[in-house]
Length: 159
Image 1 (cartoon, rainbow, N blue to C red):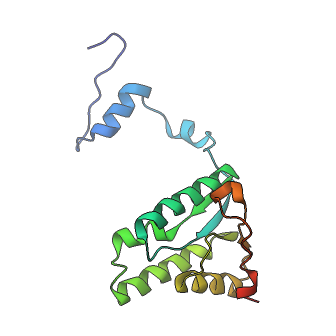
Image 2 (image 1 turned 180 degrees about the vertical axis):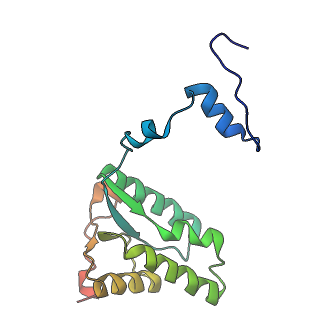
């Protein structure tokens, strides 16, 4: 054993991740954790509304890019379409409806809905309607530096 490194007892359950963290940084007391400020603490949550169905692989990559854009603007992105299709089958109508419902549950905890993409899908349309119903601001992001589309104005589709 290296000098200064203490052997840590894993307790009842052996947790290699916890053991690694303790070896590397030592044990922290709870009050030490409480006084730390998390990165992104206090950032507004924004719901990322973008296409999923169709070219799923491409749309997932785009959604990740939109999330990174939100982070670059000091916002905490919430993208339910990057999470629930991994858990629930998007091709099963009942499970798809459940995923959309869960997504709308996350949406109401957000301060804004950011809409990305040239085409508005049925799922996106439902999310936008839910945001309007809940009086959550809907922002159509048309920043060419964010995702490369020029001259797109979708507002007429909802007015």
